[in-house]
Length: 588
Image 1 (cartoon, helix red, strand yellow):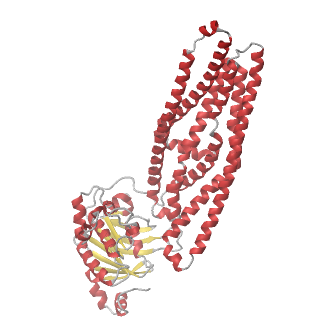
Image 2 (cartoon, rainbow, N blue to C red):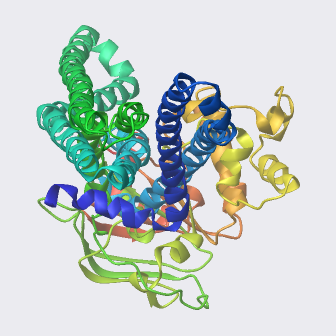
Image 3 (spheres, one colour):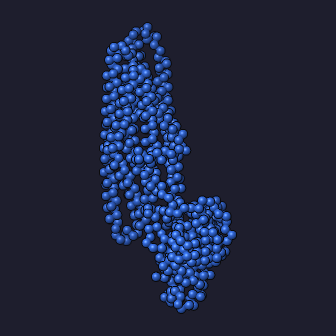
């Protein structure tokens, strides 16, 4: 039962669409029953018509051909229509279920990001979000519906036979039940491990492929493409081996199903023929039982395959719920706070440690930023600069001390509300493989087109976008690959302009740009800073002269602070020494 707990959870999750699910299952049941009715009535009709013909003209003239013929047509028409409707309803139900599952899964993992997802590889997350959820597509069509329909159809068809001869009805029920349970259980036992391993290997291969694509430059530089390819080939060989095993199990199930269908037919005939011989059963009912028995096996035909899909579905559901069941590393505030009277930031004696990190990233941190003030946070890699951005955006929680915005503790704000007050522009500002328009609308989903152009003009990119063949609807490529570095950063600036938040965090925004592009980019940033609180995070001295105050950090704490001129004039200051060493890069 524990193995099926995830499947019961899926059923509860799909409860809003239960009528679609049941409607599709009932239409599938109606199709099977219509086929069963068609075959039983046809068998009886043909046999009774033949017997009437043997009885001579008198018997033949008294025989009613029209009523059973109408019944045959009715069953045939019902079978066609119900099959057509069943395809429509079950596929509509499947699409609705997949849509709900994807949205539900995203709403579960979104509060975990980024802290709660650090232990997962990006390729693995993608595999779970796309491939595993697609695998759960099998749950309704190939697991839930076949089991439900097989159970109901077996009871109804065996009950129909029992109305004529109870022993024949009982025999059909027992043999259908054995066929529908023992064979699928055998298939599931033989194929469960292979099914689970197929899901695992496919997920691992997707993860490896995504990692390889993301790190292709490093792989080629290290001349490691051959090793990566060999690893993928080994995984693929293992996958093919499991699929061959599963195909063999499917073959056993199909052969067993054919054997049981023929065995059941023989049993029914052995029970019915003596009754006909003793005149206890009308002769025309013998072919009715025979053809009905053959048609009855349509109900259990899909069960061996359903049990195989059951293993893959369980494995995929387990991987989905493994992430969805995780709780955020820190709780979110339950309700929004009133708009703060000001946007002053006050950090006092604060300690922040990342999960599983051996030591604090921020230690006894004291820092103040008044509304409208421009401050710079200067330090080497690992000094704790970006941890301040993670703190302010509530990507990670602090363990001790105080961090306030507008006099209110940061953790008292819901994350969504807090992040409305901040705009982040960094060297890693991501551009999605979509249009310029879509990338801008991330900042303000209801922005009018004129607002988009105004943001592009402020980012000095409007003329470039106007010259593109599709303008705002031009595709930027994955990570902005179709743009130059400066153009990609300017789209990020335009997105920041569009958000129009009162506090601007600049985290190494010009890193990686050539000197000429960087100079123009920083000039554009000066316009963006006007009228905003600015937190400029950098390990370089370039642009610090525009700041009201500079905090120099090392080992997670502030070592010194002051204006650019004050610190530069002090021979004992770290900034003065950095300037003496060239002023462009802080090593440590």
